[in-house]
Length: 135
Picture 1 (cartoon, one colour):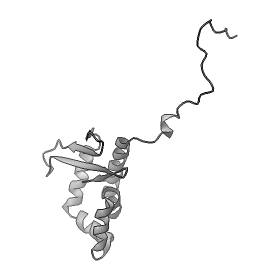
Picture 2 (cartoon, rainbow, N blue to C red):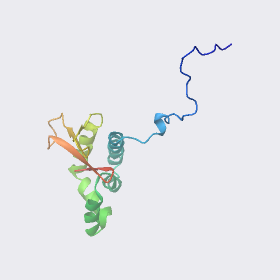
Picture 3 (cartoon, rainbow, N blue to C red):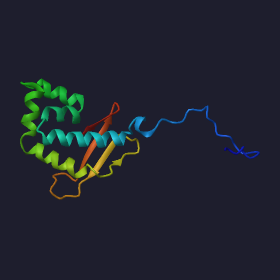
Picture 4 (cartoon, one colour):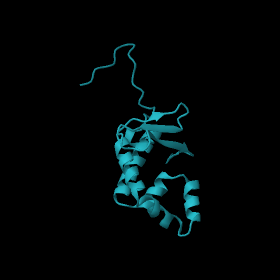
């Protein structure tokens, strides 16, 4: 048995569509960066250096690598199979659960390192054309 609505009580508007559930809304820029970091970690752990570079580097950086003899297919492993890849992997693992400092314009995300083992005090990502790239 349902009771009638009290006088003056608002009747819910069932005609207006509600917002879609959170799972179908587009991810925020910060969520996109977090997902990119986790994907990069997996690629570096699997030694998939070409894919990692394609994920993290700006297109203009990739184009420069393509200009070298052997292109990206030779340049990425050459650069990352040395200690650079391991250092990058360690850095990404350290920051993966940290909150980034986002610049006022929202186009730069900076993570500060807690470990003294890193060569730099921070790692930075820039938002270019709606995508995050490692600086």
